Image (cartoon, rainbow, N blue to C red):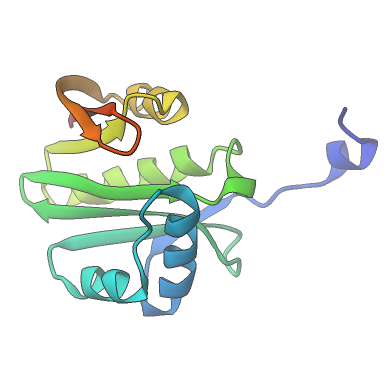
Length: 159
């Protein structure tokens, strides 16, 4: 049950910005908690250094620590989302939607007209988010997630 104080507590609107080197420890921590095989500090460092990678973080307020991130590999007019994750305690607050809307808008501004991503078929929350933002299933990779045996769904969004 929600406490009365919770009703009056004002949450800061999500703040989305480009990811930078100072965010790497946060990105690695969020990724490690969200996925069976988390990417380490060096992997994020390499990705952020690539000219073809676009990365954004979402924070609760301009001065807040990253609560989530998205990385895409861009070869215009196409982009592939490499990873997106929201920290567990921050899920369900609309941060993922705000992050992805901002990210896709920036990609569109660079001339991207199609975005692809893969998602575990069992990740219903993520699939709802993606479909709500215009993604549609175009293919399936059977047994892609070997640890669970789940299929990967390949989604596409045309801008």
